[in-house]
Image 1 (cartoon, rainbow, N blue to C red):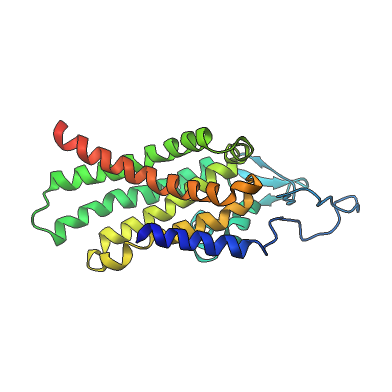
Image 2 (spheres, rainbow, N blue to C red):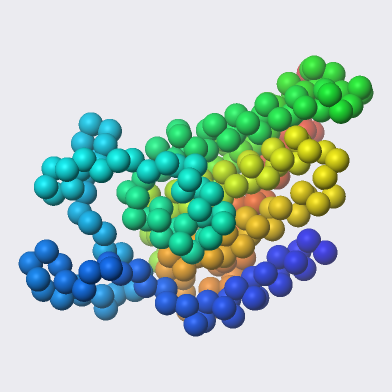
Length: 251
């Protein structure tokens, strides 16, 4: 049933995206010299020129641009994926910043949420909670690197160029961050497990809406989108299952 829902979401989004404009342009029609901006290329993004200097962003005039709130960007992606992904592209946030300021704290929250089982179940010991916390942390932390490596190996070459960019890494980090939130809620609110277990489907939707910013072969758009969904959601789940089989035997 879960796979059927995923396929229905993919089909709906692909039909919807046929009428979407996949290009991203500046709100201004002219560049700084007054000449028309060339907007003929695919996935063309034009933003205010800026450079990073001593941890903050400066434009060409040297004026400081405040760093965006990473969690607000994340929730914007969750609430309105298209506008959220555009905001991330405009924000000039790097993958390292997002990993340090957003993904890592949410990963820590996921690990800590495993200890809530001590309250709701008398059969869970402190050792069991620590083991679950380690498994959750490692499965997502290592999952990020495994996802990047696997996507480079199996995706078309024209797509791997996009995935190797900073936005490609941010794309994976943002989606893993949403999974951390959803799985944390499942642990914190076990009485709502039957409902919350379907929250990762929203991550599937976010992934599908974000694929407009990647370059796919024309005849493999649905296949590549499905691959992204399966890899991003499946790798942490697979690592979690493997660690659950290995760690009890070691201890």
